[in-house]
Length: 241
Image (cartoon, rainbow, N blue to C red; front, top):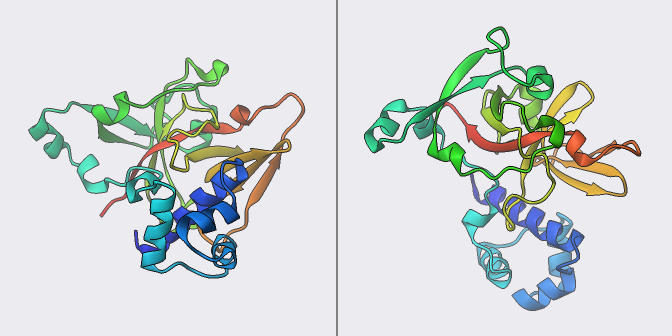
């Protein structure tokens, strides 16, 4: 992750707070000691903040860099069983399946498993759950390998071939961490998309990380809820180095 990535994560978090009504551009400008126009241009992607300006905004909102990171990118160590053996942390086998199986299969069958990965048990046990009732008995942790189309909208945070471990017992839009955007696997027609998600006026708002991709909207039926579309929370990302 580089400075520009961090810059965009901060902008997304500030925009989320403004959308929730807990912050305004005017208040942020006053807190950080900027002209309102300067903050407005930053929030609207018309200009960037300097490193000093980034620090000022973080301090004004009591944010730290680690609070902005939306997921775990501890790639190599998570795939290395030997390192876990040294610490005595037991390993869990997570099946990697297709997107369709992740969306619709209650359990991974032998025929649906493409490969398996090892993840330390401690990285799974602490995950909080908010399951959709009809999925509460489903196998909780499955993984998918992101294809080029899934990854493109989230570049550079997510590359093609990255393995995303899904917690299918977290189908709620309640933020998993109060100061971090939550990355979800979302059902969109026959496709499974990895996106940040908001909800407004009966529509799911799927937000990419890449500026080259547009925001997508999903109109929900009168009897539907966001949980009907959220396959799960992305709790771990594993990139092969």
